[in-house]
Length: 167
Image (tube, rainbow, N blue to C red; front, side, top):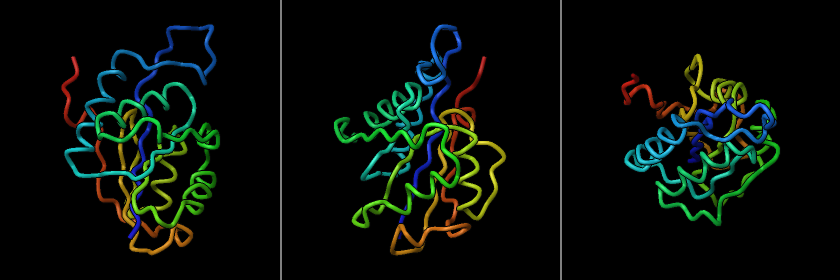
């Protein structure tokens, strides 16, 4: 069995017009939601053996915060440029090439790629994975190479607004 944890980066700031999209940091809400979701992932028992993140600042910081909350070693966090502006094909290529020794992997990236990928690989449709949203797919397969369209089952779909009240 293989398991993928898909995480959309936390809410980012648009306050710095001089920064490129790649350089945008997390805003106050993002800095609040990322640790909350990390704690929730830990509480639900999802333990990735590998975390791969887009190197964009908002995604990488989200990955670092979640890694810390789930007790994943920060020095093992992998940044992969292919996850920045990734299409579903890019996600699938990364997944199909994972080390077979791994059973659970987390990918931290961006929309629309994250939502599209979860919908193409899973058995249920999600309209939108919001910022800091988490979707977990289980694959009753023995190899990452076997993962293709609609071979996964949605085990969990969690997001901050499900738990946190907004003012």
